[in-house]
Amino acid sequence: MALTDFSSVRLLIVGDVMLDRYWFGDVTRISPEAPVPVVKIERCEERPGGAANVARNAAALGARVALLSLVGQDEAGESLACLLRDGGIDASLHVDATVSTTVKLRVLGRQQQLLRIDFEDRPSREVLRAKLGDFTRRVSDCDAVVFSDYGKGGLTHIDEMIRLARAAGKTVLVDPKGDDYSAYAGATLITPNLSEMREVVGRWKDDAELERKAAELRNRLNLAALLVTRSEEGMSLFLPERAIHEKSVAREVFDVSGAGDTVIATLAVMLAHGADWARAIHVANVAAGIVVGKLGTAVVTRDELAAALD
Image (tube, rainbow, N blue to C red; front, side, top):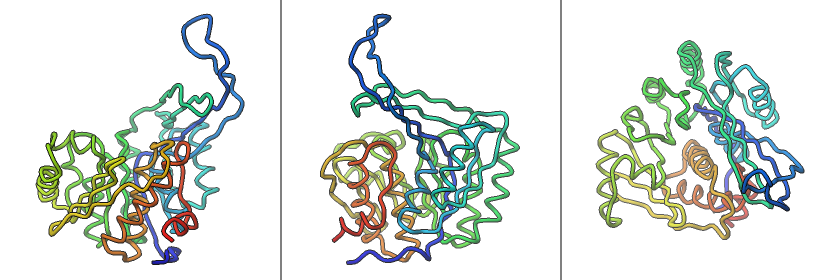
């Protein structure tokens, strides 16, 4: 089945944004000061991360994307805003002068990650409340809402935002974080990975027990569906009447960072366009297989996805 045109799809992405910085270099010696490699930096790259990467993936598929988040009053926040503007994303980034924009700095030598340094703060209540007001104004202008929770504090009012989105008749997808999912109650779909699922429901001995635990969680949170991404085992979608399993399609795994962003962005675009669950999860699984073959936080374009599906 050919991949359709998504230019009519309107998504609202809400969550924790960050700036992903990459320093690439060569390693030829060990430091005389400590037993660590010395990296001679040769080039640097910056990419939108977190919820901004979700937005970028949806835009790469051709959807019209609005992003709602917050940043610090700093150079990293300005850089992130420029990247999003260049990517054709309608970004509403509330500025909190009391915090620094979240930055993940990765140092790579010969294409291998040697070190990651994180810079982050918790946002203030005033900025969070202003963001909630902005959400209330924007939610009516979209087909679906995606919440990308990276645990940085930007989704303090997610339970209220989910209630508002569902009251407006919107499909709501959540990429969750932490061991308490009660704030996500009422969403259409949540997308934990294996380790995140274990944090919430505990371990399971086989697929039958996983399906039972998934059903219990889905019922407790009043979800339409629950998707568990299972790395090299693919992904499993748990619906009230059945489970749909998709095998991994990655030809070569280079980097899994940001793969969850690609999955939820693709699912949101497909569902907002009217695809059924089986078609949506299949296309999202193929997209994940493409993006893990790329370095760092990356996107899958509509042309790449169409070629892979063909």
